[in-house]
Amino acid sequence: MIQDSSLEIFLKKVYPNITTRQRPVLHYLWNVGRARTNEEIKTALGVPINHITGRVKELRDLGLVIDAGRRRCEITGNNVHVWAAKHPVLPPAREEKRGKETQATLL
Image (cartoon, rainbow, N blue to C red; front, side, top):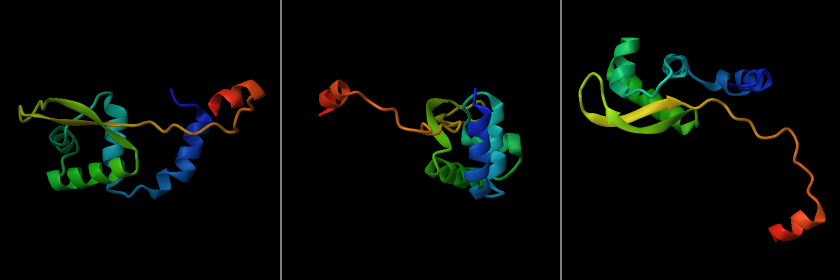
């Protein structure tokens, strides 16, 4: 589960940079609950396949969609890659202080 503060930062910093064509794909992958193939996304959203493959690539480049492996597509029956939305993970708000012993072991 995402913390409210993490979601708030994501919505302010990252979400505005997502195009109107990327949003339906990302929303679908967030809400579907399991990894989906390009063909399954296309069928669910009712758009041409070239609208999906391009958007999935762009979202992968942004780090918002990940390759979740391969499985048989429920529509085509082919063994293909499946995609899943990666929920935002933010870095820690501050760096933790380490003792001298810990710093020495890192060197």
